[in-house]
Amino acid sequence: MQNLSGGNQQKVVLAKAMATDCDILIFDEPTRGIDVGAKQEIYALMCKLVEAGKSVIMISSEMPELLGMSDRIIVMSNGRIAGVLDRSEYSQAKVLEMASSQL
Image 1 (cartoon, helix red, strand yellow):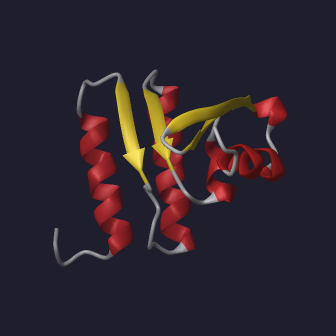
Image 2: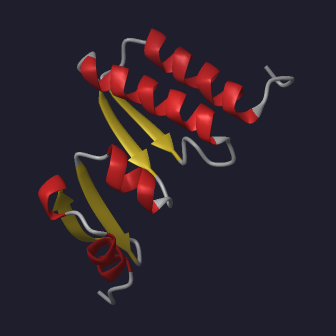
């Protein structure tokens, strides 16, 4: 696997996750450092997991990724939950405001 590109390495990791029988998967920065095409493939694989009844927790520092892929966003600030946004409440401004709040 070490000879594969970053995007293909990520896809192998996702394929392994899809082969397991776990109900909850946690992805930490799943598309960091990969090209746009590989990102789209990873997003599609993550959606297939959800369609198969799995729960996906995605940790990401990329705002478009958060806004585009999430059903709910939990914003952390200073190690604590600063707020929870449902899809109908999403905006980049709200997420940034919560992330920069002083608790």
